[in-house]
Image 1 (tube, rainbow, N blue to C red):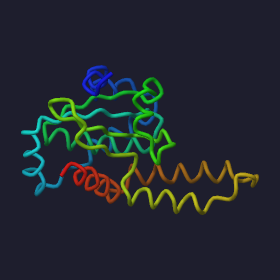
Image 2: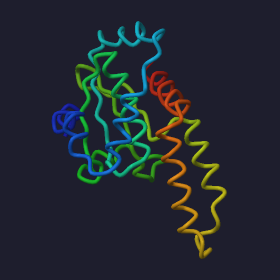
Image 3: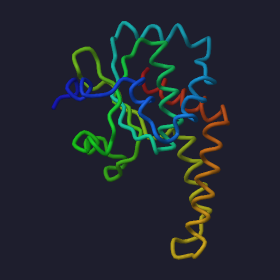
Image 4: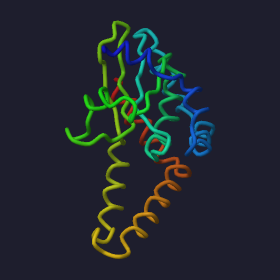
Length: 183
């Protein structure tokens, strides 16, 4: 299948959000609270001429998708980008074309296509600063053999989810990272 076919196969953002069983409330919180900086609205509006679309590979259980998708939706709203969501685990053929570091099915992945269906840009799964934060948090975990590993990892993920939902600097970093990829 070509990228236009994948796009056409996807759910709208409303369908995706309504189908979410996990992280729906947190995603909606970010969607309600995050605003595109007023000074950027004109530059994003210029993207309307490109008639971009974006395929989002995601899953509702993914904390990174929970924070990144609403930021993307705000960018899409201001720039006239049509959005379609595909669940990663049901679309591995496409996912495997966008592996992180050539090996990982990390999500979300945003595949931007032009009006002819050509790939214009790819973004994901995290902004660089968020990746650094995640790497720092992981480096503080005990080894997997340690009897406290599962507990400590669970605590780490809970802290990360809280930061993703409440820390607007994370949202701003994600926003800047996506915007820069589009320019």
